[in-house]
Image 1 (cartoon, rainbow, N blue to C red):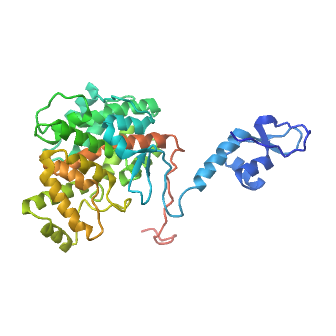
Image 2 (cartoon, rainbow, N blue to C red; image 1 turned 45 degrees about the horizontal axis):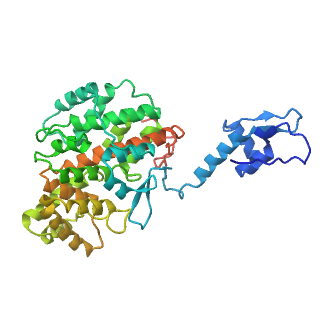
Length: 422
């Protein structure tokens, strides 16, 4: 609590009382000149009331305090030209090669709890033990009809985008941006996305985890407890990762007060870009080629000769190995069918270490998808389903910020006006 001290001499009466302060006090709290305080009033950022004794204006202390807090947050932003967004969700400290969800080690959290429980922690800061998500019949039916109408060659992100749009139309509460309503939509949307995807194998009764439903959409192989745990771990590890391109798109949409379905659509649109969502597909194909050719050296050499980067290596936020890759690879060691793909990945890693590059999560996802008979696009599906939870968390944060705050000014580089009408 901020205590406000009066400028007036001891013993003199104060019309402002404990809740109103003078112009000088407001200026001191805001760290500005008195004239700037009146500029805030003229902009509508502060309200003022005339002192009945004719000694100037008084201000609501709580309102001044709130403006001072906002000003401090904005002043603590990044250097000029660097975009930064306040968030309490994910921390990635430079050089630490670790990341945290709401202050808790993300790898430990994902290793101990199911995807749904990690999502709830990110959304609410509360661990909801045994949390499960269920798809409502009407949005699910709409999403399935829309997905079924797509051409057969449609990719997983095509299907997910259409499923989101169809589910939105079936939800009359989508424009309610209260936290309770948004969380309700999220808990329904994520399982709807999974259940709307075509099945690659027979559906099997499971323990209700999202990973069970997703498995049959990714592979026709019979699931086993270890493989399902690996898939669930991958989902939990990928829930959020600071401000990736798709997450920034989500924050912009939420800043315009787009509803949660539209927010997720914005994230999926950015994820479709070849520089963001395609890395898992490329790593899968590279790893499959290493297994087919019996060695990493010729595959790496061909990538470098063609001027292509080797997928699955390097991350701008980590100096060493991506902690998500390390955690997922460690769990894959418990999966016998992953032994060959793990060996191939380690062989590629040994070659790339000479270039100072370390594995990222796309390589570990490729080991999972290759060893479990999944398609090259399966990694994108896992990533998109998992990250939907993170996008919702960022939308919830952005809904609490000033609307349309992400409105940068363009730096015009065209011809100077006036020009003749063409």
